[in-house]
Length: 114
Length: 114
Image 1 (tube, rainbow over the protein chains, first blue to last red):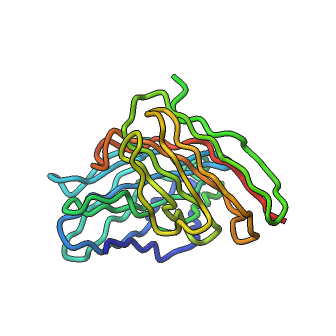
Image 2: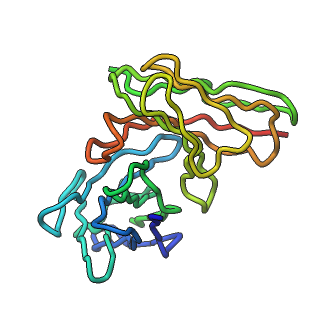
């Protein structure tokens, strides 16, 4: 069965500093990996995805994520955080060998402090 | 383009009451999903549908029912509401189970059972 873990409930970072939100996964084959963001009282919005190809994936709002197969990780990064990046971030995984929907992590709340 | 529309946005139910959470999408997506979001627990899949007339259980289906009579609509039914069903419910849709098409989420229904 596929699963994803987000080890941090909360990440605090000062505005202008780099940020990292961690995600590790478990699937039987090569994973499809995703990051979604949720702003208050809103649904989830797609940020970026890794399907195949370059391990560094660039997405919306200046975010990027690095796929590391040996460490089974897909950490979300941004070089310079903005206060408006404060939100709840979800990592999600799907095993392409199966025929099941996305499995989401429990989410990490990012707080960017001015 | 409305995307995925959920109604109502908020609802308070008494224990034992029933209700239907409505979800409709106008993107001609074949696949639709219901997730519930609980604090610190991430998103859990309740039911999903791969097309009109076809539904399947997710991780937490107990206490819920669904139907998919049209491509556009995927209502979620609670027959005997329980306090454990207090949650935020999200409907989503996609072109296929292959997640590289991306999921589009509705803005959610916040349900409280008292």
